[in-house]
Amino acid sequence: MKWRHALAAAMIAALCGCETTVPKQSFAPVPAGQRVTLASPVTIYETRGPLALKLEWNLLPGDYVERYRIPQGRMFESDGPLVQFHPTTGGATRSVGGFVLLQAKPGVGALYVVRKGQTPAYFTPLSTSIAQALTGPAGDISLVTEFPLSSLKAAGW
Image (cartoon, rainbow, N blue to C red):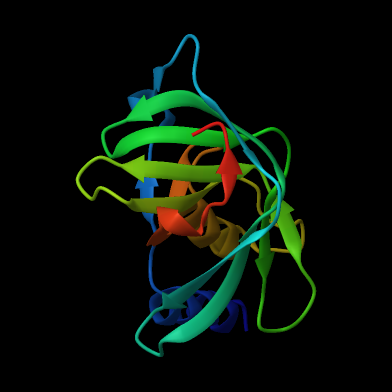
């Protein structure tokens, strides 16, 4: 029976697609980074996997501070859990995250979340191994989806 749970977890991962992961070791600290304040929420839609699932994300109002530079560009991180995800099953979850100003694509940003590196207590050892391979270590970031920077109505640009 346990192999069925592992098989189901692997199938879900394959159908949902994979996000680009940036390891924390590649972050270069920015000593006095720019601060951007969002006055209203920004809704970003992600199309995921071969089934083209539409998922809704929000950058909630608050401060986003340039803390690091990564190979992809300038990384602005929220002061607190200001990235909200609305799963298709209902409810909403919040995470620390923010956006990256993509160096290779002027005018385009990438939404990201900071990985927690956690798995639920009810997972079997095999399910835990699969989940940890997918979630990665705590502190790494997952680039979720790209969006036009023009959608950010922010002070501090």
